[in-house]
Amino acid sequence: MPTKTTRRPRPRSILVTGALGQIGSELVTALRERYGESAVIASDIRMPPRGNDGPFDFVDCTNLRSLHDAIHRHRVGTIYHLAALLSAVAESKPQVAWDVNMGSLYRVLEAARENRCAVFFPSSIGAFGPGTPKDHTPQETVQRPTTMYGVTKVAGELLCDYYFHRFGVDARGVRFPGLISYGAPPGGGTTDYAVEIFHEAIRHRHYTCFLGPDTRLDMMYMPDALKAAIGVMEADPARLVHRNAFNVTAMNFTPEELAAEIRQHIPEFVIDYHVDPVRQAIADSWPDSLDDTAARNEWGWSPDYGLPAMVRDMLENLRLKLKRAG
Image (tube, rainbow, N blue to C red; front, side):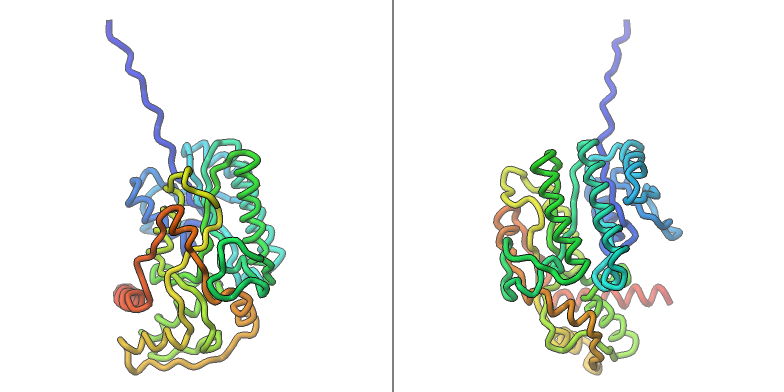
């Protein structure tokens, strides 16, 4: 008499919300390289461009039913929740920013609670405010942001902590500084100048910056951002003291210093300044630098790219991308 074979349950997959955004478009690729193409479900409220491979689902994160359906359909075990309005856009549409940023996070955490999912939530340097220590901002300090984006990030950090302590939801995250990438266009952030400057340097040898020349901020190259997002979710939970909203950083510079490094490769590059008072005020309310000791000690965080290596790699890859685009 033949014996019955027991079918193993399909491994739980990873759902990435906001997958067509600046971080999501590259995180999906990195996760698929690590866990397999079929294990990572990209989702957004827009349809992907032609040529995008791999599983994709239309998911509205402000709709709990939409989230539940996607989690059940794909047997999701981890959610990287990236759908949000960024700082400059959020300041121009504060009511929409609250509804999108907080409404979606609340529903993601609710869906995670009911379906026993882990959640990654990206906070930001924008979670700090003028009362925060400007230099080497500690992991735990005063957080009184003056922007709607910052308010949603602080509230999001607290909500993730609440869902962990109250319901046991494995919610983790990092506070990203400004992010630099050749893969996706700028998405409406205050630090977008550090992406735009490369496009203009290659195309026109000239860039007009919307932040002042001495505006000092922490920054990170996208490969390091992906490394941080994956690393904190893979970390041994027994070592995590903070679990959520770890400071992470990689490099620190002003627009003038970035321009000087670009001139090492494009000597004729010229930068001038036409300061946008809204974005300048946002940048001035943020710390000059972050202390990421907690992330280094608790889950081994360390960046791979400093300023010279980032500029060299960014120019090389962006030139290739622009050449392919014609």
